[in-house]
Length: 168
Image 1 (cartoon, rainbow, N blue to C red):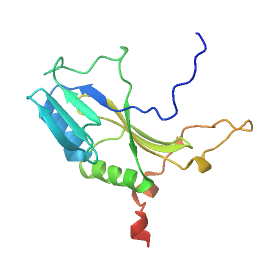
Image 2 (cartoon, rainbow, N blue to C red):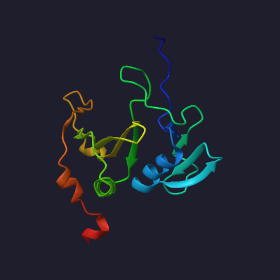
Image 3 (cartoon, rainbow, N blue to C red):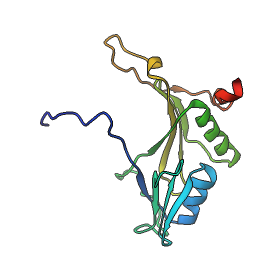
């Protein structure tokens, strides 16, 4: 591959657009369980949702997938969409929402740099809910590179995390 200049450091992923089989079922999950807010419907075939009033972090549509089934194992496509929470307490709140709605987790991990919950939406789209630890706490190798890993995440410890203002 040709050597090129790196992408600018401020570059970020703006939104993800997911194909779903049923808009209302998807909204019930993303808004009703995870807490995103509906910003706009595009007819009856698409919805745009976000956190904090942004135009959309997630687009949901049935343009090519109404009534469809998830892709079979062994095919290409999106592995998961990762939703970054601002704090550990916010991730704990997300876990409480999942528990209250009896949403099953596929896994949970402490990656050293972040803590993550893994699950699927009703259309079997993979979802990672996570928060990044402060960079000063990231594990490092002797050469200074990041030493990410996968360790067990203590869900009881996470769910008992308090918001900073609650600790005051």
